[in-house]
Amino acid sequence: MDWTTPLKAQQTDFIQRLKSAKLLHCDEKGQHSELTVISGKRLDQLRDFCWEMAEKYRRTSRVAIRDVFINNMKGKLAEEVVKSRLADFVTEVDYEKRVGGDGKVDFTLTSDSSIGIQVKSRNGNFDKIQWSISREEIEKNAVLVCILIQEEVSEAQAEYNLILAGFLPTNMITSNTGKALVGIDKLLYSGGLRSYLESLTSSEADEYMCLGYECLQKEDYQNAIAYYTQVLQLKPNNEDAYFNRGYAHYKLGDNQGAIDDYTQAINIDPNYVNAYHNRGVVRDDLGDNQGAIDDFQTAADIYKQIGDEAGYKEELSYISHYSTEWIDTWEH
Image 1 (tube, rainbow, N blue to C red):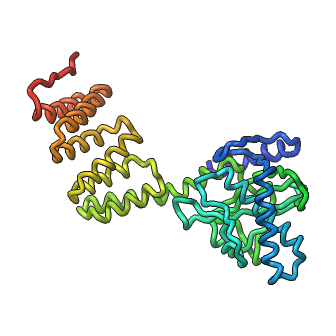
Image 2: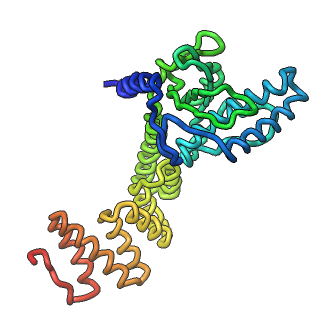
Image 3: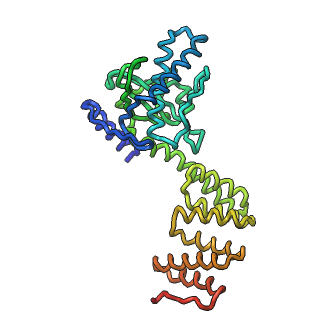
């Protein structure tokens, strides 16, 4: 089954619920919500910024200043929705007071600036409107996110109910002219947006993992560290990247760097038996006998829990170098 099939089905259900105003609503930042409400101080700050931008554009634009303000408001309201839903996964909303636009990219992923997100907003009847994206925006961004503004945008509006209408990967958008138009029924359900963006970083992280491993095989430890560092920029909780980078640090004589990385791997996966063992080896090299014993003992305990007698015996053999008082408890 194509990965878009479930999201298309969910989008159909979403459109039906939109007709009856039965939308999912969550105020917590970083969590999915079909509806985002902006009002109060947050709206006041946004409105003030848009007026300042309109004043700047007065010098270079023939468009009425009120129309410039409204266009700015539509754009920033939409960007605030995306930022609320994706939180730290994406860069900040651009509130620089500059003339010349945002370079056709509204957000990038915080972990990868090459992955752009274009945000478009419209207000009106959801079953009649279409969102427009230019060919340049298609080329510069990985995904289009569409926002539906339910209210008429004005200086006096006290509250906006903004709907995350859906998203579409730009490689699924065709433009025979200078722009493409997309209706709500052609979008994918917004609940899959974050997962889709994560999949873009996952494939890149996997490639860096492979390159790092190739460097380890060639004993090119410096470049291995560089590749595993790139993995961790994309996937901060990849315990294997920490483990492998720790090994590369160790081979280059950076014992503290190795311990730090092995510890990070253990923090992510408390049962990472090889990380305990390797950290024990490094601590042994540093003369930290008790630290080494503790790590080898923890590794032995994990092997015992999973029924790996060979691994258990091997860890005890390491402990035996420090003391003859260790006890084999495999049968106990």
